[in-house]
Image (tube, rainbow, N blue to C red):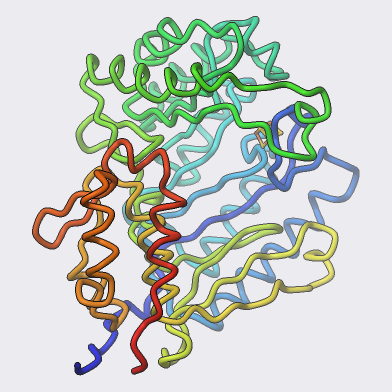
Length: 384
Ligand code: SF4
């Protein structure tokens, strides 16, 4: 069989920027975050500008989307946010399609919402988590439900597209009123994640447990309730009204390359030039103190087979599924032929379904996605 010629876009069109600072650390959080200390934000901003210049000198970049996440980016002071945005724009440009800012509800005044909009953000991802104050207190959040209501209304007044984050399966949480309440705020997108207890977190130390029944209910009931408000589950944990999908996150789920800027940020880069051993590269930046010294993380070559299994892992999260013909064209691997036995087995087990070139997970498949993709990883690709 003749190998296909990979047709991966050599231009990088997406940028993630990590801001690691938070006012306090939530007891369930296992992200790379730390509280603010004197002088640290200034050093972070200087190094960020240097790193942006390094990326600009290495890759061909034409941005569609920018995502400023964390941490709590909206916790940056106004002059710091201006410096960060102007550094990024100077070296890397700005997203033509979508520019998202992650926002903590306790940080939004009308003036700040106007500043963020003027700087070029057009989408806000707001960490509402719940609209029930006892649930927020249990989660160790510093904001309350009223602050979320005000924050979303201020952001909408500035013309932001707004997404609200929701955590489900929290003990004692009134899920129905949380979902209805979030929709009533006027958001067009909801990200709903089950509370998970990661090792090393305060919740893990306290022995907090998540009830499996509540987890399943969060998964199915959230979808039912949001469907009643015109939201479609377009990804395992994400729901949108028509046209409100996150273009940035879609790039991850569709296996596209993206730049990772900032401490702890993960990036997925085109290999220049691509070879049979390395189609793309992945790199996760070190945590803040090493990153400040100019250290870079290890760059891992991704071969076409690994690229395909990564793309399956991400793409099967999408309700629409994954276009196998497009994936074959991007990777140079004949996906249909190479994985035919696995696909047939998973379809027979009711975990995947195939519709022409599209392969998607069933709701049962979503529950065991790691196992499903693990089966693909067992396949030994034919030598090219
Ligand atoms: S605000 Fe978000 S990033 Fe910061 S500690 Fe809490 S969960 Fe983690």
